Length: 82
Image 1: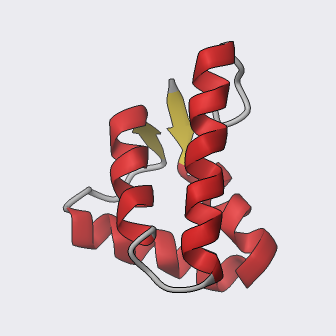
Image 2 (image 1 turned 90 degrees about the vertical axis):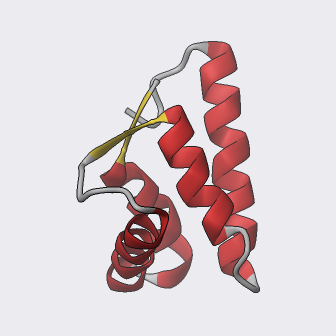
């Protein structure tokens, strides 16, 4: 499954705003060693989300929710994240 960066950012933007969500994803991509890209495979998306889960507060909760939603989409063969 391909996960689009804009979809991840959009999920976080619902709780923290677009600018902060963009910053969060870009900073996490850099800290996990991923090049700037617009799409991720499942492993890359989970690595980014796992790193964000180490944060405190609502950001970690949202990362858990998104991880579960990606797993569910994969299991059901849905295209929500692409």
